[in-house]
Amino acid sequence: MMITPIHRFRDIERKPEYLQPDKCVPPPSHSSLGTMWFIRDGCGIACAVVTWMLVFYADFVVLLVMLVPSRDYVYSVINGILFNTLAFLALASHFRAMLTDPGAVPKGNATKEFIESLQLKPGQVVYKCPKCCSIKPDRAHHCSVCKRCIRKMDHHCPWVNNCVGENNQKYFVLFTMYIALISLHALIMVGFHFLYCFEEDWTKCSSFSPPTTVILLILLCFEALLFLIFTSVMFGTQVHSICTDETGIERLKNQEPTWEKVSGWEGMKLAFGGNFSLSWLSPFSDLSCKKLPPARAVTVAPAETLSQEEIEQFLEQTVAVQVLKY
Image 1: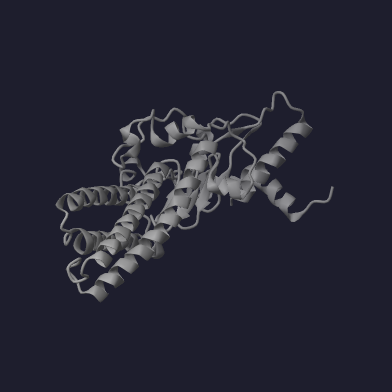
Image 2 (image 1 turned 90 degrees about the vertical axis):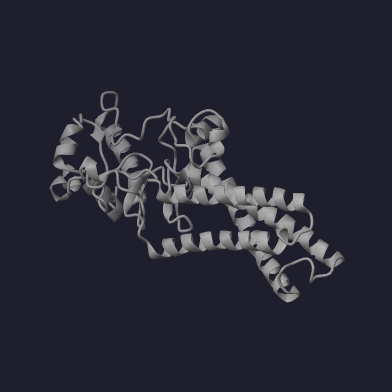
C-alpha cells in the first residue's frame, strides 16, 4: 500500500516521542485555577458590548416611547415588568455564558510526570494537542480563539465572547431563548403601538416628535425581527445538538460516534443539570447534577482480544479521527 503524507503523519503521531513531554510547561497550581474565566479577544468583547447596547436600546424604546406615554396603566405595568424580566434573564444568561469555563482541558498537562501517572498499559493510546500541550480527552477540540482544548466544544460564539461547551451550553441556550422572547414581545408591542398611533393623534401617543417616534420604532422592529430569526435558529440548533448528543463540530465533520450516545430527554437533563424544574430556566443555577463523568484522557484499545493487525487497524482509524481535530 502506498504511504501518503497523511499516513506518515499518523505514524509519527502514534510514536511516544510525539508527545514530547519535556517541552510542555507544567499546568498552573490549584491556587491559580480559581481565577475568573474571560477571553481577551477584541472582536468578541466588541460583539458582547454591542449585544448589551442593543438590549438597552430595545428597553429604552419599549419604556419611553411605547409604555410610559400609554394611557392604559395596567397595559404599561404588565408589559413593562414582563419585558424587563425577560431582558434581565437574557443579560444574566449572556453574562454566565461569557464568564463560565466552557470545559477547558488543563493547559500543559502533557508532562512526563502526568503521562507516567496514567500508568498506561500496552494498547492504550493518549493524544496530545500540540497547540496547548494538553492530553486531549475524547470529543475535545482546540479553539484558536480561546487557545485551549474545550470538552464537547460546539462552536466559538463571538456574541458571548466564549466557546460553547459542556459547562456553559445551558446558559447559551437560555440566552438565545430569552433574546428570542423579548424580540417577539417587542414586535408585538410595536404592532399594537402603530395601530394605536394611527387611530389617535401622533403627538399624543409618544413623548417624542412623530418623525423621531417612527424612526425609533422602525429601528426596534428591524432589530427585533433580525434577532428573533437568528436566536430562534440558534436555539433550535442547540436543543437538537443536546437531544442527539452531537456537537456542531461533530455534525459538520460527519464524525462517526466513538462514544456511547445519551440522547433525548436524558441529554437535556445532563445539559441543564438534573430533572426538569424551574432551575432549568434560571441562569443563576449551577450544573450540580452531572451523571456522567468527564471525558477520560485515555482511549483504550482492546489489545487482549485483537490480533496485531487488528490493533494496527484500530489505531489507524482512531488517529485518523483525532488528526481531523487539529
